[in-house]
Length: 430
Image 1 (tube, rainbow, N blue to C red):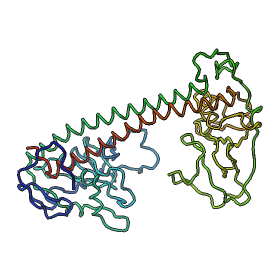
Image 2 (image 1 turned 90 degrees about the vertical axis):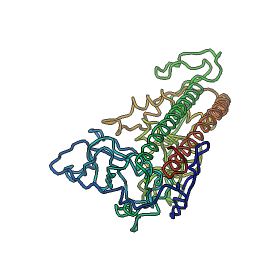
Image 3 (image 1 turned 60 degrees about the vertical axis):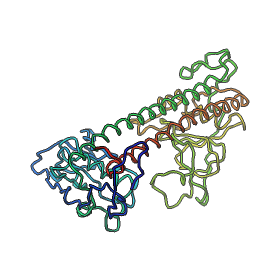
Image 4 (image 1 turned 180 degrees about the horizontal axis):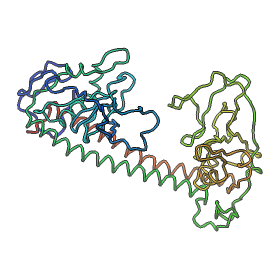
């Protein structure tokens, strides 16, 4: 089930557990059915005895904020089940369709949770934290997918009654749980530090891009007022022009609707819909959709205030409600430079300011608003140099981010191996 963690002591002797996925276990351990440890807690909240609503989120049982108790919630929480500290909550549905998120958690607070989850109590002579780690290990190692039944491979309490578990002394359970509490907290802290470093590296990359496309890469270049309040100073040799002198709106339509469907987002710019991992509504017929050519600037007018725009790298079709613009003079802009520039903070703030709508999620940025705005930019040659500079500097930052991400993966793998080794007796802690 797991590898032995390097540097840890092993028990003096082991024996075959008789269960393939458990492998060998310490000679003084025995295997028994889960019904000797787990019982099902079926207490409902009749009479609304409890009001604190809990939720299972990525392996943690959290208190759900009151502001989120809207939308798809029941009229009454009387049907919810009461949860006590130390109860273990299992999300039992759809094993085959969800093999990534953590589906087990241990409750720290008293409250109520949807009865769609399985709520299990641990026998009084057992340590709940040990059994939480045990169930976590068979979840993260995918052993849990050996169980379950039905078309969608759902789990039930019957599966946990039959689940092979260990006859481990309470003293050893407590020692294992305490060891894992301490070690996993250290690993989680190390992961958190690296995640913060990634955030800082991404911020540094954004600052690099922002500075390069709005102020150039020559720190000694003389500056001038652009004459546009929200653009501010730009290098003295740069131009500041309204978009209407640089672009024209394109409204070319698809006859067949069979061209490649493109999507426009603030994260990825203009990309094929086929590459998006989202279950978005797909129309039956795309005849009449707008087409765009390679190099066309495309705005998602409903989400421009978030920076949902990009320069297309290919021919395809987009929503007929999007704005498509083409340079009046070819090679006025380097495509990458243009997209970088229009996604900088100052420009996005301008979209927000001039867009119309009742509130942020309904703002619209129309073609006349784009044509009325100014762009500050250098020659095409300097744009090329700026893009090359960004590429070279970003590569170094991306490599640093990648290194941090690899280390996070290794830490998480080590954490999983450590938990598995401890709860299955592959390492000796007592």
